[in-house]
Image (cartoon, rainbow, N blue to C red):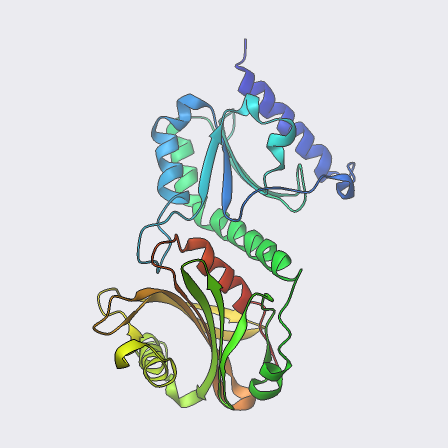
Length: 325
């Protein structure tokens, strides 16, 4: 007799195949649920407690880049396949891992709820499952990340800050939550912040000439010099301290796009020199050849007693709404 999770898995794929054939109306799906970056892991208990579960945790609970303390990419909750029914299938993100008679990885959209992104990994042995998890985790994480950015942006759009001056002065519009306020604004620099229970989240917008960031080989050093110069001059801190990039941790830099334009994405930690203040930042340097500039968008958090993953994730989602003139 086949284990119940194999039977359920077969039913799962029969359901999926039907959906792929266009025979099910996805507009009738219920709304998905779950906190931002909450991942439902559907896997038999024996696999979860062995090498397969370890591979999942190593990839999907790996530390987020650029945070001062280790926080996982996703907050995970595990359940066996036989429990993956009814409301339990409504989580916005799910990873379904099971032994089967074939080796296959599938990324599915809106299978049980909307919006929803799921990944199904099946293999003929535990060792093969581990191999497929390690090989495919980056693209699955990328799909989950993109899904959660959209969800965070959807929630933000419910109540937006009115800030026509940012577009008029800096030539860029951002969808910023109404909880933010302008802390400082000049003809070349905007600083917006949101008060937290113990701290703040902050958004900076400014520009520098294209020549300030020379090429890929020097980009991270150039970006650090720019943000340290701006921070020390324009961000007031107590006792004449300097708001700078923390020396102890090398920032991470990636190539990306914002509003169809090339951008450098830099993640790291900041500090106030000679003071007990610090936190994470995410910085986008957007190449704007039309206006002969790099437009700099940065989000940083000061929240010494709080977890910072989701605070920085909100800032990342805001900066990704940028539309340049």
